Image 1 (cartoon, rainbow, N blue to C red):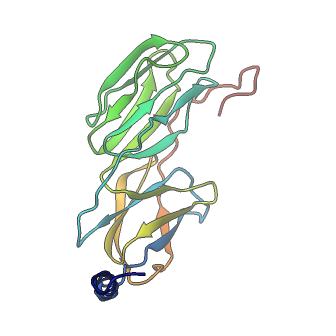
Image 2: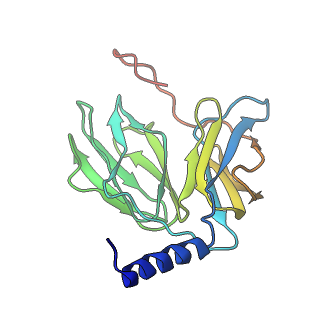
Length: 219
């Protein structure tokens, strides 16, 4: 049985907890990306930057993986937060030479097969274009963000960004064929903001085309 001082302490603690302001519920923003013909656009990166507060980003403890398979980078587009480590395993039977000349992250991994020796740290925000010095058609993108609120559109053009506190946000969209960011302001007052429909006027796909190999790879 609790003594009177202990009962007073517990009662005071409960009253203190009741006096705290209620936690703000996390909200969601639904986005759909379409082209000029109202067709869904996959591989668009969408992110939200708070306008009234400062967002904190925490890189994942394990490296994000961009593999080389079928003489292609997979995935084609990879959004990450600043400070993320990315590994580039080579699952092909031929060697690759991965590199980037992009200002946010210049690096190269000379000819190798199997696992790359060490992960690459993407420590500056911006778009990083990946290539292979041996296979000119191989290209991919790492979009490095300084906001934890982001998503990538799927084959239906849809993306969901969750875990958002109420407030004003700057919504930005990037796509390899729409390299200029498209932005707008979004206000989240409750659990869900109004659905956002983004129309992207895509530039022609300039990737080098190659014939499928014996395994049917190619694009």
